[in-house]
Length: 193
Image (cartoon, rainbow, N blue to C red; front, side):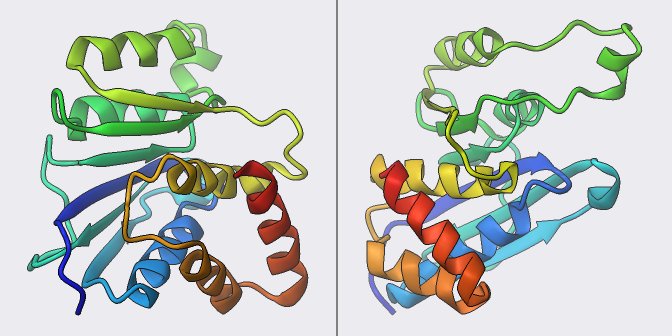
C-alpha cells in the first residue's frame, strides 16, 4: 500500500441524494490509487428522507468510523446536514467543508416551528471555527441526482485529497455505473472541473 497521511472524511446528506454512491466512488478511487482505505455508511431513515452519514478513513487505521470532532474533510449535500456535521465532526482550525447549497427542509421548518437555515449560517459557523469552506451550487446541473458528482468534482478540483487522481475517479465511477449513467456523470464531472 502507498504511504499516505491519515485522512478522516465524513459525507452527510439526506436519503436519496446519492451519499452511498459518492462514498463508494471515493473508496474505490482511493483503492485504485493504492491507498489503504476503510469506509462505512449509516443509513438511518434514508428511504424516508432522513439523515445519511458515510465515513471514510485512509492510512493506518483500525476502524472506518470517524470520532466526534475528528473529520479532516466534510462533504455535505444539504445545508442542514452540513450545519449539524460541522458541530458534530468539525475540528476547529483544521477541517475543510465542501457543501452543496440546497435545502431539504426538516419537519420543524415545514411546520413553522423552526427558522429556515441559509448559507450564511454555514459560512458564519465555519468562520467562527476557523474552517475553510467551499460552496457548490450548479444551476446547470442536468439532474438533481448529480449533486454528489458536483461535490466530487469540487473535492478533486480543490485537491483536498492529494492522492486522488482523475483516472482513479473515472475508473471508480465506471466500476459502479452502467454505461449510460457513467457517460452522463463523467461528462458532468468534466464540466465541473
